[in-house]
Amino acid sequence: MKRHIPNALTSANLLCGMIGIIYVLMGEINYGAYFILLAALFDFLDGFVARILKVSGELGKQLDSLADLVTFGVLPSFVLFKMVESNTDIWYLPFLVLIVAVFSAVRLAKFNIDERQSDRFIGVPTPANALLISTLPFLSDRILLFEEFLGNPYLLIGLAFLMSYLLVAELPLIALKFKDYSFTNNIFRYFVIGSSLIFLILLGIAGIPFAIISYIALSIAEAWITKNAEKLS
Image (cartoon, rainbow, N blue to C red):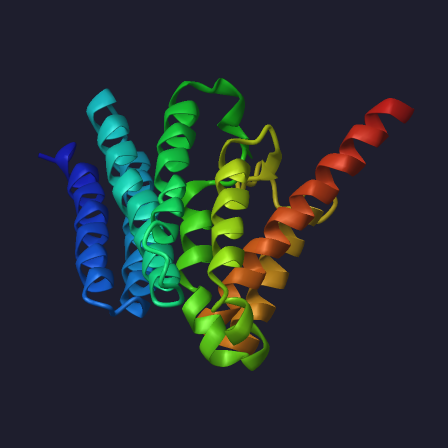
């Protein structure tokens, strides 16, 4: 019985994704972010509980990827679809942002077979991408400057293509997996956590896009510093 508990949590992740899609199609795009946040919690808990109970298996791994594709791939694509659709009369433009779901599928498939991603990610993780996209409407409501930017369908399409590329790019990104808790060995991890907390405290959900952008920027900085340090040594 206990081996099915993590799979039940993964299924809850999938359920959140489907409910979120329904709300987005009804025009309630803010609910997309709420259900992605809830799904992210279930996504964390299924792995955490599996480690606690010491159960794992190929079924859980495949189910996790399928759930993530719906919740962190299809759902954010629909959020962008509705945002573009509400700001253009050109019928085909909203369909261009569905590229996010396609590249999310590629990203998840690569993750399952890429053994390099044990201690860091290669490319932007699908949950991070989904959170960035789904919380854009909150940013538009909170900061007037972004209302015009996020109302431009071509900029939204450009964002969709950029994030699709970053999902599968050979870009090493920080994973919040601590081998120890020393500041020296985890300085960039602590910077990621600290900057994210600051944005969330100041802006609430609207701070999530800034938190994700700072995470990507800090990861690039860490990779550059590490690469140059290896050259000097």
